[in-house]
Amino acid sequence: MPGPEHGSSAAGALLRACRPRQWAKNVLVLAAPAAAGMIFHPRIAAEVLGAFVVMSMVSSSTYLVNDVRDVEKDRRHPRKRFRPIAAGELQVRTALIWACILAVAGIAAGALIAPALGLVALAYLVLTAAYTAWLKNVAVVDIAVIAAGFVLRALAGAAATDIHLSGWFVLVTAFGAIFLVVGKRFAELKRDGQGASVRATLGVYSLEGLWYALAGSALLTFLSYFGWAVTRVQHRPVFILSAVPLGLWLAMYTNLVHNGHGEAPEDIVLGHRTLILLGAAWALICGAGIYVGI
Image 1 (cartoon, rainbow, N blue to C red):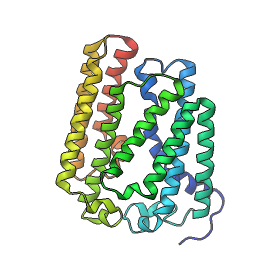
Image 2: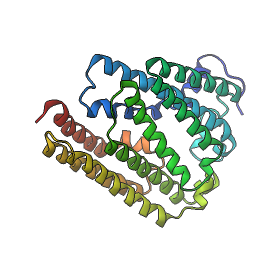
Image 3: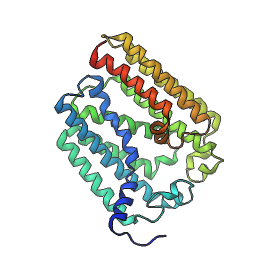
Image 4: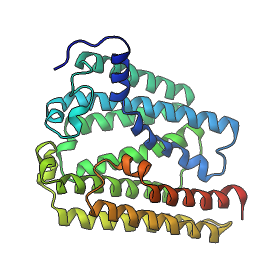
């Protein structure tokens, strides 16, 4: 493997190992304050930004630890072998040192913003540590744990701002996360069986079972969102209308997974034009109901 790190190349490798594209998942900290119509309040906005930074720090810490643990498996994977640690661009010792720094700093920063946020950050680290050490090799549980991580992201925003997170939104987040993770597993298993050599649980799953789970989680995500929409006392028709682009988004994503995509959900969500347009339509309609009141 390549030799010692030096200069800006090491800094670049470290940044890539922290997976900044994955930070997009942490926009879930917006859920509670955005749904409450308070996201533009200066104090709330600052607390949400702080929660985003905290969750990005602790999540990057877990990515570094995960990549250290899986370095040999990643080197046999057609895509993951280019990750900085697997490629030898970032030394294991450096990665572990920065993982500790990011974990401690993230929890401390969270506690300074709000004690509850510090606890959420700690819970996220404990959950992901258990996932990396053991639970990632337990079929079904591995999907549930990742979904729980998404729920914790949403709870982080609520904890930072002391705003109640609707039970319906928790369900939407959980089922939506399950939908994305099942799609990822489906794509991995469908990819000529190569994924089974680098992810132990794939040997337990079947394409048929994952397909039913994908369709079921998509339906539950939609029904949970619709349940939230109909419980909105004011401007209910607008919120019900916002379920249309969401339903189309879920259907489009499901079709993409069926056609062999979905192994890297962030690439599809951030790179597929139709999904971006449907997401923007949902945000505009839902935002109009919350902030404009039409």
